[in-house]
Length: 150
Image 1 (tube, one colour):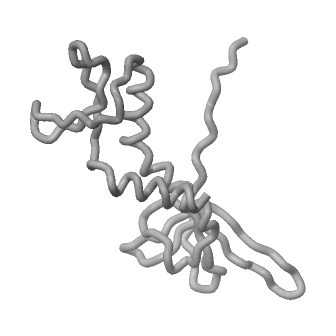
Image 2 (cartoon, one colour; image 1 turned 60 degrees about the horizontal axis):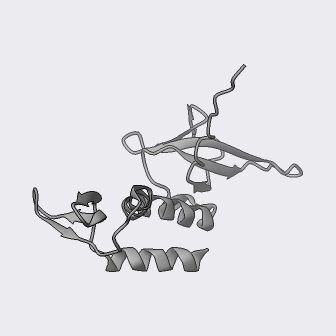
């Protein structure tokens, strides 16, 4: 997957920065365009789309691809050292809480409070004597909620 991510990032870097929109031009169908200032625009020749749905897909892919690539990269990295964790953002935390002869661990969502200089997880501050988190990873996406019909 890393090769695909790198290839997509390379394509994004070479392309004209977005945002992109669809502009319907008489006798030209649906065109993917990039606006510079006000009404001035460049027609990005990815091809004239006879079908608006295809143009919608191209625009959405160009405008929104960086965010899913970020998530894929984070998922591939897996657990990361706690020193690399972002501050003031809810993340998934892990700590080894083993006390011989028992193996144990703790995992919960939490964050580093920048002003108080403490970890907060499971809704509580991590005390000095407690087991601090040693690793972190981004929270997964929330599950899709489907409407249940009676």
